[in-house]
Each structure stands twice: as C-alpha cells, then as structure tokens.
Length: 308
Image (cartoon, rainbow, N blue to C red):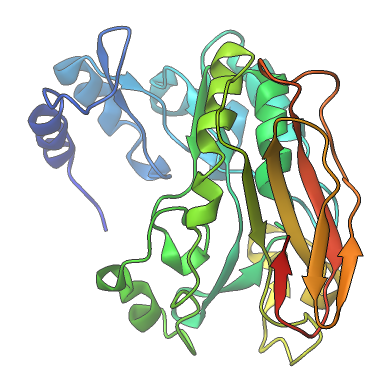
C-alpha cells in the first residue's frame, strides 16, 4: 500500500509531541520498513518536519541504501538478523553497515525466532533461531551500535513476536491463507523476562538484578515428526540456498538462566532426571554479582518436560 508524503508528514506531526515519542538530538526519530521506491519523498518530509531519518532499506544493501534520495538517510537500520542455514548468526552484515555508514548511526536488529507459513504472501519458510535470542544480545554487547531494534512486538505471521498474544491481531493468517493458526497457545512472553538485564548490559556495560530467572523454550513436536508441507529452511526468494528444516533446527529444550552464582541444573522428563551442561557462560563477573548467565540445552524427548 502506497502512503503519500502528505500522510507521512501528518502522522509525524500528530505523534511527535506525544510524550512516548522517541527523539534523537531533539529531532523526531523516524524509520521505515522498506519503501525504497518512495525514497525521494523523504527530501520534502525531512525539510518539513526536521526528523531524524533512519530507514530499513535492506533490500538495496547498505551502500545503495545510503545513496537513495540523494543520501537523505541520517543512518540505516538493517533487517538482517537471522542465521544462514545451520550456521550461527554473525555480525558480518552489521560490520558492513557500520563501515558503509562511516560514522553515521546504525540500528542493529535483534530477533528471537522466525517461522512463517503464509502461502497467500508467498512466505513459507523458517530461519534457524534455536539459540538466536541469547546469541544476538551477546553480539549487541560486543558491537555496541548506536541503536538496537527488537523485532518484533506483534508480528504474529512471522512468529518473532515478544509481546502478549492478541487474537484481535491475527488477520495475517486469513489474508495469507495460512493452513492453520500457529500462534494460538504459543506465548513468547518468556523472552521479555531477561530484557531488562540485556538492555542494561548493552547501555551501561553491566547490570544488576535481585531475582534469578530461568526461561525455557522449545518446539512442541520433533522436526521429523511430520512432513514439512512445503516449508523450507532459508528461502530462494531472497537468493538463499534452501535446506530441509529437519536438517537445520535442533530437537532440544533451550534454556537461558540469570543466576547469582554457579549452579547445577537438571531437567526432569519422563521417569528420569538429567543434568545439563552450559553451552555458553560469561567470562568472570557479569554485572555487580558473580552471575552465571548462559544458554544450555538437552536433547528433546517424547515426554512433557519441566525444569528443576
């Protein structure tokens, strides 16, 4: 849907004075999701509003995006935060943006998950996201971008929502001809539990906490339990080599823990109790407490699982 430059101007004017609106260096912060064909519109919009403009024009790549609209962007936002195939996520694209921007601000994306099955939008794929939430925040701490964007609050169609479930916002499943609603009874609220710690560490280099936290997530079925119904891992629509999902995702229960001291963790499932090993732990002290923080996993089993 094309929105006129007048409509955009009016939206900025209406919301800019709202106390919840974010300003950067006293300017209204404005971003987009794509919209590269309308890049020239931002010349007049910026002149009229004085906004700080940081678009996501990832489809053009960093160098070309920076030149759109005669170089109208004040910084760039990347939408690339998922791993390729079975590889772990890296900061290669982030570094490319940083180098291209040459001192202009960069907004780094952080996502927890990705799965979509919306044939009506020609979108039926997943990207490996098993331990992405923790991995990506570690990269943010290291990379220290000017801005960080968590994607998303309520994009239910792509499964990367961290906001609460809301059955009034499920129109994508009908419009996109989804074979089923894969969001119902799938809350992602747990990913918000560690956000205060993640954000404080990014902003201040350390964080404090007074409550230990354990968050678990997993898929309710094995990757090989049924056919893939045409779902691929990666997507040729973005010039990626496609894989079978079963070859990409791990059948595991994933856990992240924020602890005040080292601890031995066990997983109870079926009739047994099983100890787990940390995949990642911080070096030395994290925050103001001798905190052990990391992601651990166990092989998935065909039983209800609980952490103890």
